[in-house]
Length: 341
Image (cartoon, rainbow, N blue to C red):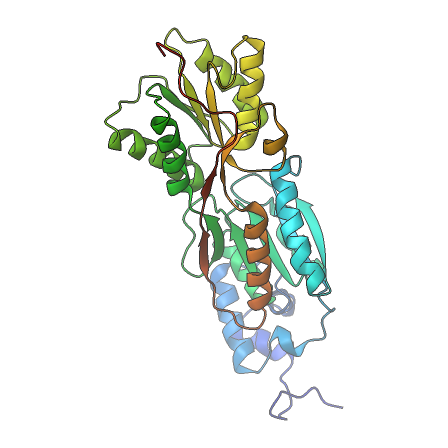
């Protein structure tokens, strides 16, 4: 039986498409199957010819997509666990499972990831923090694999779906909470300087300090990488200063727990001598000694929202940009500054 297009007309061969576009048959096959190794200009030319001849991935026999792929730069902390729990809940409700991938860095997955995901054919992809190159986005769309970025590292283009949290207002609320307790010597440990969520939290901190008429002392803004070791090292540096802060706003709960350790090593009591605020509200925050005051970023809900969005994009390709609200969770790690502090 001849290979027919949807309108019943015999489909031209790949060799004919190759001849029309002045490329090899293997190049046409790469474009049709969404593989790498083709320049953007050539890919656009071949895709146009394929569309004109009625070719599309939807016309091909594909394996049933029964899983959502979550991509992390590292899967080694409670933040990642919250994301997995949220995505797994939605996948389970849809009769699917979750595949975890560790690849690349906070900016983008590694170069080997794209070819792998095209071969795996997931129902959708959720990327943590990362951005994707234009070519990577093109290849995923060629294979009709929707993707969503959670808390993107930069400002994604309008055609990239994303789910984030209200980082600026969270930074503002955390700092204002400390100011309302009477603190004026407030330091901050941020995340990476090139991540949007980190710079937004820092901007919220500065706005709260400005609104209260407070200056930020030199050396009271230090950067880390959102991990426990950053809180330990940067917190220690702040506590070793001659002018020591009475409060530290950490850019993540993991950093805040590192500050706890730095304070213990120096015999500094929390909250009697030092108030600490985190960001995220991971589960260990409530178990810390003392329980950590933090900004709740709805991590599990972010992953649930991203999973529902990526599945909805399988039916309708319109990307959305969603931002979830933050709120203060006041526990026992904050108090009025010590007398004379």
